[in-house]
Image 1 (spheres, rainbow, N blue to C red):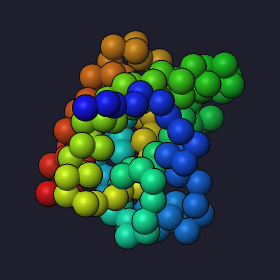
Image 2 (cartoon, rainbow, N blue to C red; image 1 turned 30 degrees about the vertical axis):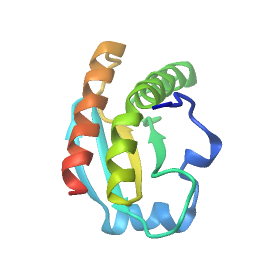
Image 3 (tube, rainbow, N blue to C red; image 1 turned 30 degrees about the horizontal axis):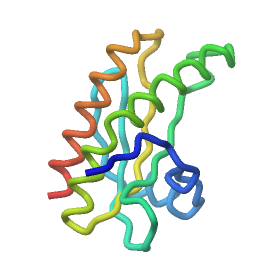
Length: 128
């Protein structure tokens, strides 16, 4: 089995209709320091999940800090998304998800990675 650890442009969630639907009718749960909002989608696509990310400017005033956290969360997702993709592909489902960084202070990459693993496990249970 060949798995790609790339994060392609087509995997990014940029559709305004999907983003608004995500916040009006999406389900959510937390794995501190992250929170995820997700919604099943019907449209056909190249990837089983579309991913978006948010780090609040109110809590992290400096762009350098927000960008570092974004890179860390994106990296954790990139390395562990194959677990979610296998599950979604076998069930023939697709989801749109947005991950939000909710902690008030910067956490270590290890904490972020563990939270991302918990989120992926939770998403796998939620799509059953």
